[in-house]
Image 1 (cartoon, helix red, strand yellow):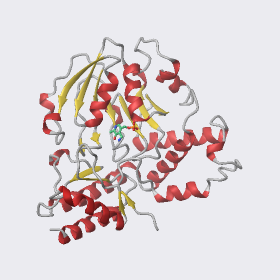
Image 2: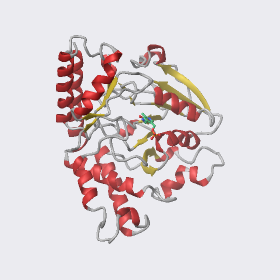
Image 3: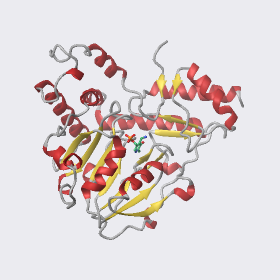
Length: 361
Ligand code: PMP
């Protein structure tokens, strides 16, 4: 058996050089005579490792100094709930622009803590497009506008940053974190789980404009108060040290690959290759998303008959192509082609798809 190309939506493929480095230094790390998992998060070796990861993330994303970078637990889901508690009081309103499942979830996690308003939703079209900006009904004076730049399940991605005036934009970038250059200064908060583009599960990252914290006027348990994490370098309690360390290695790998611009160009080529294979299949394969909203990271597609799904998945697996089953809410297939998926992996999928269509046409 050998390693396959893994198209899983998350946890997802990690760069092989990173896994090899983890393997090489698993027993003894940094001269500590112990594994990174076994040493104190307050020891100098881990403090340095954590700081290096933050520095590299700041460099790769060009994060301005007036933003905190927080390394947290609980995934993007917990963060969506914590952000509602930390960014505003109960009488304030959060606007939501819904383009899929994860935006809906964030709204439900916000609802108990403040007023919520759906400013726009693509639900009527089964989340296959982005509602036209001109039709958004934003609340004047809202505390923030939440949206999901890339909806992982539906494969719907914004290709520009919406203009919402002076209201802070809060964006869940779980599935397109560092997938291309992004102007951080346009956002109030960027947040997401690490387990798709940046590392293993267990770590979530929030990039928060400093002036937005500490104004909610609520009596929060100290552990829910994001300012406490900000003041303590994300070590108000024990952080997920192993995940943080692996994330640091992934960031170093990203830098060595040329950074956000280079990885963005590669991701664009990968997505173009796959969509061309779908669109050029004479209708055999079908992607339902409006071309302008197609995701560069998650590519859902359907076969001509759902009865072909099982054989497709079985043969794909035998050919070394894993994790292609679509989310149950959408059906069909989904290829997640995050940063760690090499171009040869996408090419292998494209070749397999052509061969399968020939044999089952
Ligand atoms: N938001 C998005 C865009 C996601 O893709 C996911 C996970 N698939 C989540 C939120 C939920 O993340 P977590 O499991 O880390 O809470």
